[in-house]
Image 1 (tube, rainbow, N blue to C red):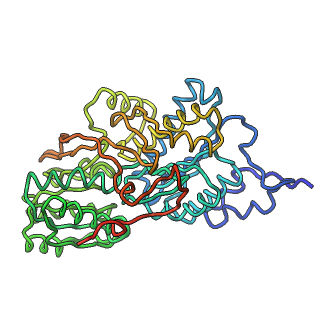
Image 2 (tube, rainbow, N blue to C red):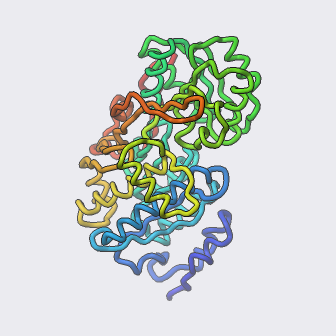
Length: 422
């Protein structure tokens, strides 16, 4: 007996708590009905935040993914088929992410997913992705260490970003470092990486603080930095509350202490949101910023601005979303099928694509990208210049023996699994 079909509106209208409740009655003979099943082409899920805590970064991620898909569809699609899109707003809610991930897999039969900004979101949905062997692109710059057969973490890792900026700061300013970081998984592991890279370059961390995400008052932290008298500060602060550190830095006269970062400017555009000179002499290890002065990037920014009348800043993650759609297209065309296992096999053969940051190559063994890293510097007017461009491989996972071409792991490694963290 065939049960009733339910519309997307029926199932999704209730929000995260009830997003799947309607599925119980929405079954057909043989199981759940896939609403996208009538199309011969691929269905992709874009689960990126357009509201809530992470809307500032998620909106651009959603839009660049859509831009790439629209460009591909105009050029004939993939294997001659137009790409269908499933893209409800997860609203920066991890429970809703879990519901929508299940819905995308069970009902939409999606061929590939782009989903989530934070590491907490990734880890909330990764067990579901693993259970169903779902091809998943995670594009945020992150702490690193994920070795997972169907997950492709394409953002620059902490080892790549800090590996660009920490040695640069040591050479330019000296070998005594004070670390301030967000008090959660990403910030703590990034702090470990600062210690490791400092030791590798003959430097030391003379102080460190891990700051709650809702903290917005930094008077005591600024006093502690003054007392420690470091040559520079490494900042892995994140989010709206933490951005107030830079205004308080200016008010206290701490702008005479330069700052290196792996999080600020390239993600939440603090250099544009906060008045100069609060970010004077802030140096960020980045693979991409909208200001990158290349013809390829300028053409990308122009296409984006033309597509979205209210376009705002293209963050580093949004650029990763954009090129990864083309990475997926290339893998499908090589495989000659949308079958996920076959597409993953082609991704693991090694693919290079053009990206706004420069040509990027996917590392088959780790599912990460060899990024074009550079150091971005904000001057007293918050004008951005770039220095020390070089390719940095995702070396840490090679060090711990991650090889997904031969072993289908579902692990997240931490620095302590290989390095002795001081």
